[in-house]
Image 1 (cartoon, rainbow, N blue to C red):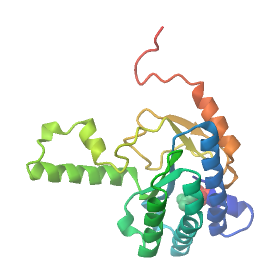
Image 2: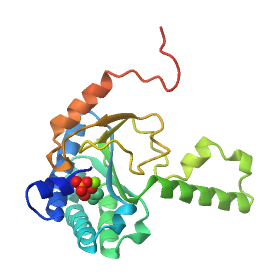
Image 3: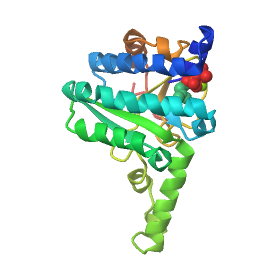
Image 4: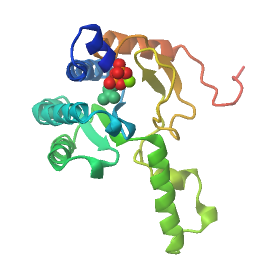
Length: 225
Ligand code: IPE
Ligand code: MG
């Protein structure tokens, strides 16, 4: 969800206003997924690197998350959207953590769409954490090193139980992964949109999905002829 800061700058507004406007785009993306029949939407809300931003901006983003988690949770439950928050939540202030834990609880039965919000997340941190967890299993004698295969590693990722993403949409025209889901994106199709995140609409999302549907995915193999 990139481009909030530039969106605000273009309007002579403080960066926080871009993050606020970005919340509208989250609603748009959710509606777009429901309309397109997408089952899982994962949003990169805040990276571990984002903690290094000015305190004022970090507080603003966290405040918005808390505000929307509390404001939207009943609506999300009614719409059948199940929300999960994934990342290093130990670094998140308690009031924000409580708000996001509450939204997970309230929406736990949602069946229509799964929304994963990556918060205080980075792909490298996730892999380091996974390595530590597996090492611990090995040290305790519960697993031999040669039993560590792809399935075992995936079991200790934040995304345990979820399929790899089919499509990655990056907004604001940047051509990089920025430490997002480094393991899971191995064969994911990438769609770069020039649109800044606050301006990203459900139509933009559906257009990306339709364009994706025309692609041929070979997963390193050859096409069946
Ligand atoms: C993404 O927008 C939102 C967060 C990281 C919270 P940016 O804040 O990175 O927007 P730009 O890149 O400065 O435009
Ligand atoms: Mg950015």
